[in-house]
Every structure is written in structure tokens, then in C-alpha cells.
Length: 339
Image (cartoon, rainbow, N blue to C red; front, side, top):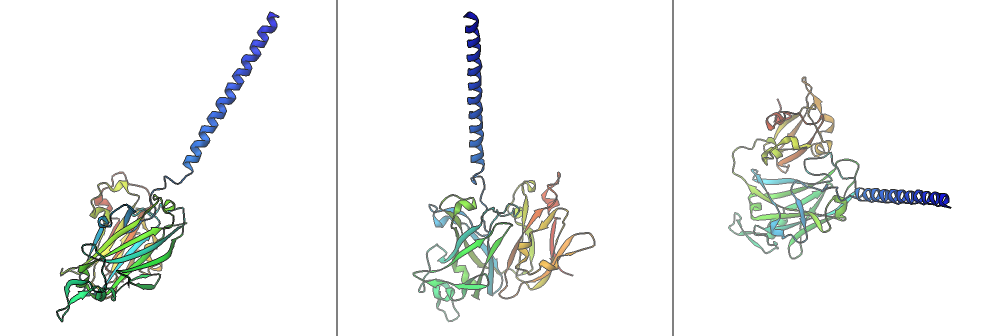
């Protein structure tokens, strides 16, 4: 009996150990599966819905706190400004959104204090006959074009417009361009702001929280500067971002009003241009290579009714050079008059 008792004790110990191993193994797999479920969500997506003139805002944010983009123009008439809505973070076209995006674009006409403008609103700018410009005078000369279709501001207790059913399909970096055009005297626009919004149908698909959207305000300021020549620069450098090595891509903006042919050159050993940003210039098939191996395009800019600025995204091609600084980055892209 004693021998049998020892055997049974041994058997029970084996059974208990086996049960413990099974329970521990089940618990371990349960924890791993739980982690997988967390990782598979899109909460870490980050905002992949952006604009060159708008930033992320929420329903609780006061509209008076929207960022104001001041756009100086030197032309007396015929102002054109391009606003983009993109499916990637500004400055990083490589991180395009894995989800399709649908949204509504809207714009409203405000005075410089942020109040809605109506047809009878009297503004400070005076016409040649001495009368004040009204909201109606500005609204009838102002439109926003999307997909080649101009949309006018409609007076409904304030001038506004809405462009619905906008989309950005996934699969690659994409942008929609909204061209704001004003055919009157440019100086009149100094009296107003254009408040713009892009409201996604599903903010979470964009990496945003519920109730968030893109919003901003444009302020067109007529400048008396003598120089109308175009110039180009990295916006990150202009905004004094400290270290270029932290960036996966660069924004490069050109601006001016003079009508002339320019050359945009870049070094493919360091950066490559995103082809979507050549659409407005109609230059996709005109990319050439010079004797040193650098790529370039030549195109005409300026003139009445033409945009006064363009922005391009250049993404890295071979990683980040160890000794990179803003001095070296400046050589990646150049912009100068064509010979």
C-alpha cells in the first residue's frame, strides 16, 4: 500500500504540473492575442489628412483661434491662391493614408475681425467714386475652383460656399487643389478673410479624433514691393525647424508675380519630387536630366489670373546623410530663371 501511495502521489504531481503548464500556456497566448488586437487598430495612424493653409481643429475650438495665413500679392488685379487638401502629413508624402478619405470643403467670407460679411456690409476700402466697397462687391468677384468647376459665394445671411463629396483615394500620395480666384482690385481683399474648412466624413480614418477637421483663414494682402521676381525656399527652413535630419521629406515653395520662365532643379541622389505636385504645372512629361545628373523642369509662371505661389514635396531617396545640415540641404533643390 505504501508503494502504491507513493505512485499515486507521483501521478498527482505530474497531473498538477501538466495542468499548471496548460493554464500558463493558455494565459500566455491570451495575452499575445490581446496585444495583437491592440496593434491591429489604427489608433497609431497619426494625422494623414493635411493642408498647406489649414491645421487640425475641433468642434470646441473657437474659430477666432484658427491660423491666419497672410498671402502678400503685388499684382493690382487678378489674384489667385491655391489651397491643398492631402492624404498625408505636410512634408512627408511617403506616409500616405491607407484609408480612402471623403470630406466636405467649405469657405466663408469674413471681415478682419472675424464677423460674417453680408451684401450690405460696408468695408473701409473706397472705390474711385468715393463709395465704400460692400460685401457684395467682393463676393461677386471671388470664386473657388475645384476639378475645373468654379464655385461662387452665395449670400445666405453671410457669403459662403460648400463643395461636397470630395475624396482622396488611398494607394499613393494624393492632393486636391482649391484655387481661389479674385478678379477685382487686389487691395480690396485686405479688408476681408476667407475662412476655409475640410470636414472628413470619418475623422478616425484620417488619424483624427471624432469631431476634428481641418480649418484655417486666408488673408490676402496687397504689397507695394517693387520686386515681383519669383523665389524658392524650403518652408521648414523658413519656419526655423532646427534639424533637417528629423524630416523624411521637404516642402519647397516658390512665389512671385512676374511672368517669366524658370527652372526647378533637384539632385536625385538625395531627393525626388512627388509627381502629384507637377500636375498644376502640366510638366510631368518634361522632366529632364542635365550633364551632372541632376533633374530639372522648366515652366512659365506669373501673369494676370495665375497662381502667385506653388508648393512641392521632395522625399528622400537614399536615407539621411550623417553630416547633413541646412547648408547642405539648400543644394538639393534650386530655383532660378531659365537661360
